[in-house]
Image (cartoon, rainbow, N blue to C red; front, side, top):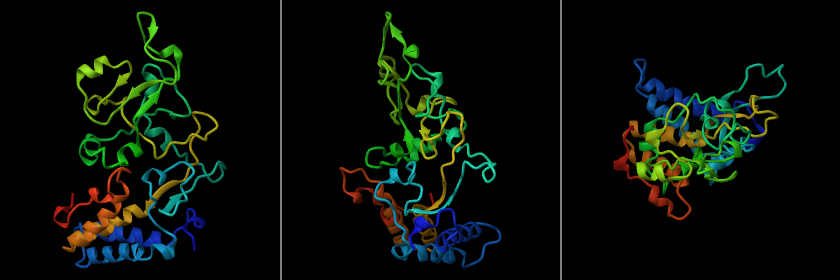
Amino acid sequence: MDNDVLLGKATAAAAKHLLAKVYLARGYSSAKKSDDFKNAYNAAKSVLDNVDALGLGLLPDFASVYAEGNEANKEVLFSVQHTSNLTYNNVSNTLNFLFVMGYENFPGLIRSMAYGRPYARVRPTDWLSNICFADKINDTRYFKTFQSVWLANSADKIPKENGVPKYSVGDTAIYMPGVDVSDAKIDASRYLLVPPRNYNLQLFTTMLKYQDTKRTAINDVSIRPVIVYRLGETYLLAAEAAFQLGDKQSAAKYINIVRERAAAANISPSVMDIKPADVTLD
């Protein structure tokens, strides 16, 4: 049966994925059993060994996994559904607000549906930006997850120099390159150039996974499905369990499947591979 006809329902694949997570969690606890990591590995592997029969699979492009309107894709194991009917949806889904930085507080920009309602409650950690995704050339996941460019949408807010606007509506107003740049380059930029070291509570890259541009009004909550479990994580669960069993060969194999999918189009996916000896819990 195709995975996309089971929206929001608990399937056997989703149950096994969750079971692997539970076994892993218990394996690190004081209540651990001697076979927890083995059971975690077997539960995750039973899903991965049958992806074709289950109608599952990794999407070729990481960006499409969370693309708006594509939440029923074959990588999704379980999602939470929402509806505009308040009888069934009385708990508001405001995830689409929480990750949006305060762009409206900066030159050239006013609040818009395209950029979302800027609650600015959750920002990426320095570890995520600078260590986890240090490679932003070969690994495409960072820029496919976070918004790095905001285009000016208000002529009234565009700064002027000697009475002349520095840029026009539709030009770059904010750019976050994800890597450090010199103070001299920042000062010379006609738009707001923001490296990670200058992020603050209102100015940071916006995670796009929950954006909802199809709402009627800017203050409306979202009714997009929220992806809870997906196959990409199942591979990592299997890898972690394999590592705990001393099987670094299998751990690297499963990690590399996920990493290769993230490779830039102009490189061989094998560039993203790690060796068994490279595998650690981190």
